[in-house]
Image 1 (spheres, rainbow, N blue to C red):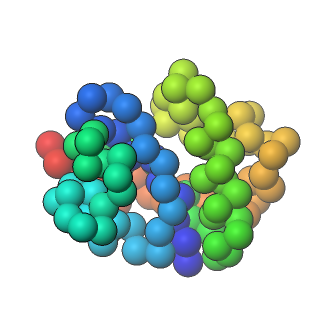
Image 2: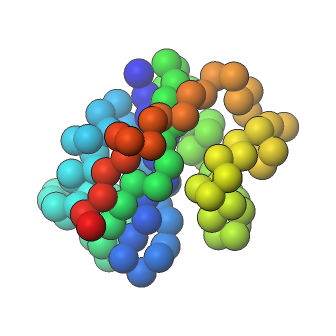
Length: 109
């Protein structure tokens, strides 16, 4: 299982990534240890905003790529409305992704 996630940073920026273990990866970003992303070393991670899961690494990478290409406004819209089909339906097969339950979202607050 692969997860594509959108992480909110303390400066309100959004980082998007993929992982096979969402809890471990979130903790790496929060702790800013040697395994965190360069981006979250400079922009302290605060909260996971959205997470999708898929069985295929190729599909996870494809979704990550297209989310990263969105404008900040479109990323905020995706977080707020979870409208993956509307924003990226022409670029990815949305049936390959399942929204991870919001109750599982991690936060430092």
